[in-house]
Figure 1: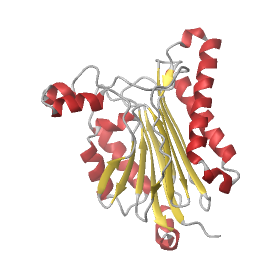
Figure 2: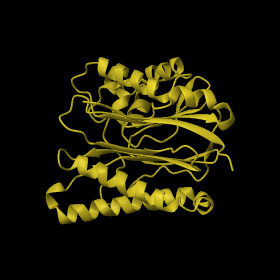
Figure 3: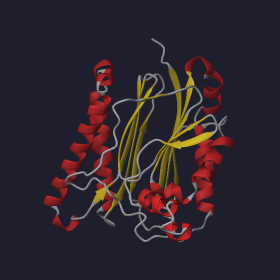
Length: 281
């Protein structure tokens, strides 16, 4: 049976202005596959801890999803349950690692994982790594932000804080939920999927990409909506690096363009050899 959608997927990584890379990402949208998966983790805990945490989380979650998707019809009956189980398995692995190596106490990672099955998008997220949907020229963040930022922004809208004070608040990036081997306070994993449409673009990212304002990200997607995902990734990377911000965090993201299979011949020709991973620094 012919697949419903054609996917044009590419991933990108940059250290930003950091000395080491604590983001990890795996994307698998193989041509003709029934299910596509992207898993991203943003590590915390410093060198030799944050980078290990993100790799543990991405490896464990991706491996579990790949194992379970082998039987597609069964997998699609409970994708949210599988996502939750995979996240908890990764959390247990973090706990085991810290017990074996006490010097890594405090290590942890955010998680955002998205699964596309048939015309449906499922996801799980823990932390502040955003999942965006670009549709009809507008950028929408689908997942919850598990940091203090939403509360601080609400205080600003209520007049309790000034706009500049809210933007520079020292607790803005403090996480309210994260995988670190202990109880997980908040998990965003809706049971009901988002129905995807021809022309949708998914953007799964670490919070480093949000050194660009959402309006700038939206404009880049709008400019390049007819271009291959690789061109969009190059544009976003160039713009975030052009900020020349000395505090620029690690940046990682995956872009997945979605197109009805019957309309994809021209797009396949344009993107031949372009999918893959972009690395800067």
